[in-house]
Amino acid sequence: DGGITQSPKYLFRKEGQNVTLSCEQNLNHDAMYWYRQDPGQGLRLIYYSQIVNDFQKGDIAEGYSVSREKKESFPLTVTSAQKNPTAFYLCASSMRLAQGDTQYFGPGTRLTVL
Amino acid sequence: QKEVEQDPGPLSVPEGAIVSLNCTYSNSAFQYFMWYRQYSRKGPELLMYTYSSGNKEDGRFTAQVDKSSKYISLFIRDSQPSDSATYLCAMSAILIWGSQGNLIFGKGTKLSVKP
Image (cartoon, rainbow over all chains, first blue to last red; front, side):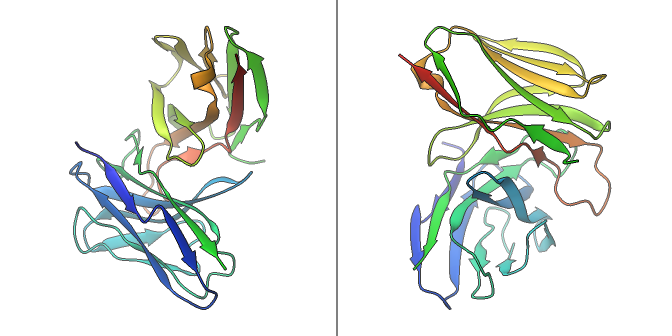
């Protein structure tokens, strides 16, 4: 089955710790994205990548980092510098970073900071 | 003014009702319009995709775009309890190099269909 997988589904972190969220796709898509979703806030773009070894900051990149070493994988690290990391994180991919290309989403990771 | 405005609801209707969900936008360059459905604690899934103005129908769902009014709608006929979800509109414009991503999302409308 083609799709996007995210792991883990739930993640708990202590304050001051870095954590890495996994995102893998087997759709052969070039572009991948990370969003954060908070109640009443909609989807906010953290980082996106249009090709391997390239990525760009989105609207709320502070406190986050990413890498894109393989086409299939786009992990997101939530660093201790992120002041309010508790949220639902969604990974998405699209064939290209181009107008009209549909984004397909993974199931999400819910991160809670204790 | 935000680029995309969407009434957050919640919207509660009885089973079998016709549901109308709407978004307004300010950027006249938007050309592609999408509706996503998101069940609780799940990722959004693409429901409808429309290019430019006009209507598109898929089963009980109809997407409508009025570019002159900068207004898009999603109609659900014969609504079912399984339609209970949050509906997100999304749209994209001609990509300008260096812009941040290619989709602008509304905040979502929460719909509840009561049996």
